[in-house]
Image 1 (spheres, rainbow, N blue to C red):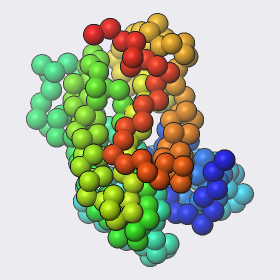
Image 2 (image 1 turned 90 degrees about the horizontal axis):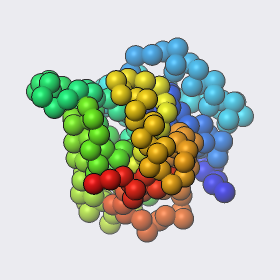
Image 3 (image 1 turned 45 degrees about the horizontal axis):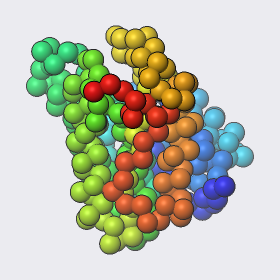
Image 4 (image 1 turned 60 degrees about the horizontal axis):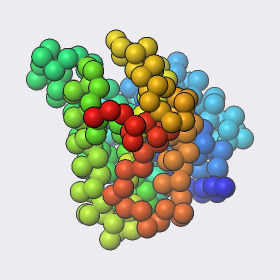
Length: 254
């Protein structure tokens, strides 16, 4: 369905979970892939192997850096510019955050979560736009916490709400330059990240109870939506948040 031969894609947080699924799908569709990681070099090496298997041996760029730090972003894009000279797709997927009740959140917790989940899209886009040369796609990965409330999710949910608002504002600035800026929002996805939730089992149980599809969203489901957003099929979709949740958001009480 998708032919991205000759396209260049940069996926932040691209060595595990949703990010890795996106990287593998893009590589399988013929794109050159760069993935960002923060600390886990072994996961990055495993991701490299998976991407090479999907692409028929084409090696990805592995870019180490913290997307919450402007200097790290500048270095990563300098390497992309040097190695590739251009960029077609930016997938802002890297995420983190403090999972605590609101009464326990400190300013540090808040700032850390906001910087990685929301602010990072600003410098990432700023560096990506010149490399896109008037034809590109920017897709940010969000979550249902942006519009619904979940236990221990106050900081992360607020950061995802800010992210989706930023997507809309960037759309206004960049659409006339040939750049599509959109978000893909997922419900509970059983990745390694979900293991950090203190109420993981309750979240899964409640999701399955209310979700019309009666099965959890998988990383590949989110990746499929991102592939669609990168394609010409959605060339007139701008500033949109595409929800992948098996119908959960229309069924949750409240």
